[in-house]
Length: 184
Image (cartoon, rainbow, N blue to C red; front, top):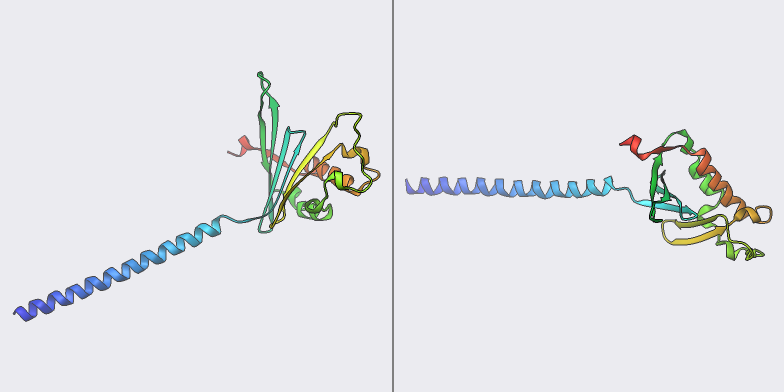
């Protein structure tokens, strides 16, 4: 009888031990799957273009996988003279965005040199600039910043100025933006 009791307890112990091991294995597997899913859910930004115009209008474009997404934020001065967010927009993600990548590539936005590095360019020191376009670009490896002041003045002489103005015209006039409040 004692032998049966001992055999029964041993058998029961082995079953419980086996169940315990298999359930901990499942827990480990599930956590691994959860971690892999979290990594997949957060696509890595492969390219980034930030543009601000006169420190008042900010565009931000991010490319994840093969899709570009964008935000547009405008600022205004409040009664105390402080700069505050006026309005926020997001990319409409409609057909107006189909050619965005082609424009970025064709206009060489990721590779434009700073205006002061263009051969033959001389700043107009007699007047304050009316428009300043400040860029920050990330190409997947490096981030760099550059700016253009009144590129309209050099539009006939420099392809870089033409590309900046074409890009700005495209993102302001041809891309469709949706006010953030209307989405939420």
